[in-house]
Amino acid sequence: MILKLDHIYKDYNTGKLVVPVLHDVSLHVEEGEYVAIMGPSGSGKSTLMNIIGCLDRPTSGSYELNGENVLNKDDRSMAEIRLRNLGFVFQNFQLLPKQSALENVALPLVYAGVRRRERQRRAAEALTSVGLQDRMNFQPSQLSGGQKQRVAIARAMVNKPRLLLADEPTGALDSHSSIELMKLFQRLNDDGVTIVMITHSPDIAAYARRTCDIFDGVISERRSGHINAAQRAEKEAEEEAERALARMRQASRRREQTGGLA
Ligand code: ADP
Ligand code: MG
Image (cartoon, rainbow, N blue to C red):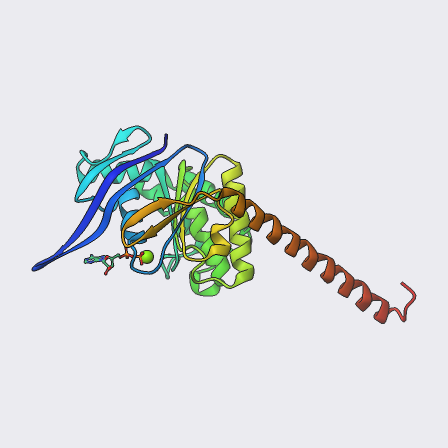
């Protein structure tokens, strides 16, 4: 089991006020799964993601990542666990604005102590695998939203983590780029990467193979995997119909251009 969270509680302590956010959250994820976590704004999704991502600690509960108890580690060991096991993708990309795509992707390798040439080689390979081989030296401001998110995915995957954590990864993308991104996630999952993705879009959650709902800090399993599969089939049929329509339009344009001789 790659993720094993049991009876997680999280309160934020803001001086006078204690804000309870997560309430008895248990979540078990097997290697190779693709899980969507859905919930309204303020329900505790990012709080949970920060705990899963070893960026924050719960108030109580237990958490094992890859069989390792992460909560009894000091911050430094936690950071090491993070580097070794996890890739992150965020809604707002979180790329360094003055650095090229290549430098952004190479950054986790700096922390991992990889030498410069090897860093560049691996970063270039990761960018190529997301289709950005001709954008390596572009800065984020020179890239579209979808391209920025692909740079972020290349950065997340450059250390070859087993678990990809995504917090609203399509939140800032148009629907075309969102679908492209979901195809990329699907490919990573097919290659064996475990994915935990937060979203509040049912269309996006439908790409996952399992969905959990979180509401007011309480998590529950959605028992309707077949609906996700049905939604996915419907989406594929829609995409196929769109492609067929595009082919027809193209053919009719060609006929116009050639005066009906093609
Ligand atoms: P979501 O990602 O589902 O929108 P969050 O996990 O960001 O929700 O926040 C859940 C609740 O916790 C919200 O009510 C938010 O105000 C509160 N919260 C989040 N971070 C903090 C913090 N650092 N201090 C105090 N309250 C916080
Ligand atoms: Mg959030």
